[in-house]
Length: 223
Image (tube, rainbow, N blue to C red):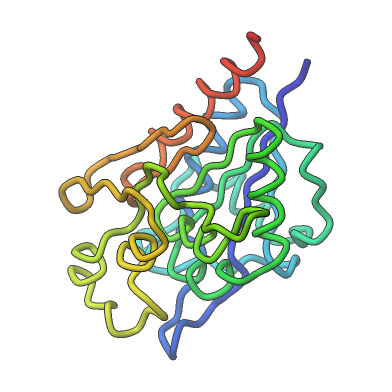
């Protein structure tokens, strides 16, 4: 049976006056992993339409291997069109735009809870992990409480001098909600797998999280 993966992007192009958007590699690298594995892949964004790409992520131009994904980002469907049962896994990409429009979005929260509770893979990388912020289980507890995760760290935020621009520090917020937050050295690949929840720390983790999701999806299908 064909495996189907959903990639979710921010639609935000501004963060407190700082130009932002999607960090292209964080969706493009996993996309290529999934297509090579013969998975079916869809890309949606919060609002639909054209996805803003953080210019810093393509400061040397769009890499050849990411050009196809970049073309798909010109016209996306909105996350409100998504039904969780159509997919085996979801990956929330990052870029600082994600921390602007992922937290508090009801479609994001419902997708996460429904996917996870139905034994599907929920994954997020870098600021895409902000999709988990504020999400609650049916009993009112925080979704991340007691779960092992990673994401863009406080030290990494300070290293790029954006700790004063972000709405909140992702590491601190997730710890407040009870997450067991694991940190690796700044800007090194780091992926944490906790059952059906897979998280990556930073852009350097993009390829590795794609591989981890591929393994997890193939494992699900073996049962």
